[in-house]
Amino acid sequence: MQNIHATEIETKEWALRVDLAAAFRLAVHFDWHESVGNHFSAAVSADGKKFLLNPKWKHFSEIRASDLLLLDADDPEVMNGPEAPDPTAWCIHGAVHAAVPNARVLLHCHPTYATALATLKDPTIKPIDQNTARFFNRIAIDLNFGGLADEAEEGQRIARAFGNQSVMMMGNHGVSVAADTVAEAFEDLYFLERAAKTLVLAYSTGQELNVMSDEIAEKTARSWEDFSEASFAHFDHLKTILDKTDPSYRE
Ligand SMILES: [Zn+2]
Image (cartoon, rainbow, N blue to C red; front, top):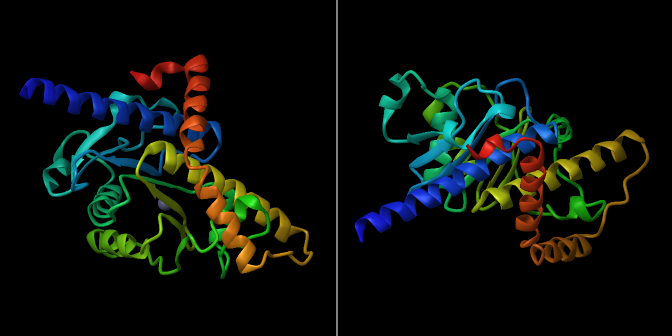
């Protein structure tokens, strides 16, 4: 029985590895990647302390399921290995997985339009169309980025900044998105960047924005919640595109 249980865990972890590897490749497809930086992670253990993270300085376009590091937030020894992760990412992602219950998956990057919004004094995503309204009153805004004085403290601070939200605009920095599954986190990141693009283009006209009433924005955001299953259909479709072009993410 124990062996069957072990196999089940391995199968689950492998499926998570494949999905997370796909997310890296798809981030390149959508041009959200930046040099060999940024990090996506996924909790493996129930307490979130054991998690998968991309290896240091490996380009997103080359990441395979087997490349992902399995790390333990409580084991600083991982920093001594030849494949030591980026220490900041290990601290921040470890702290968020352990402290934020709905953060089984955490995607952090600097996509162009969302990052442009994050540089504004007010990075709020104003509800001006359906995509922007998806995030109405559903985003944490962290305006306290102050460099990394102490990595462990920064991890705790970021975990607290999420509050009870799962999408965070990080002032002067970028975005982080948390969810139960890779597909759901990816979908939020996809719509966040699309919403940011629309808002940045609307701002760039210099015309006054036609911001929805709170009531209509809230109604629209709630309607999106009925579409949550679409995340899985979209992510599956995106994986079939990868399968046709370069299925090596599954290795
Ligand atoms: Zn960053």
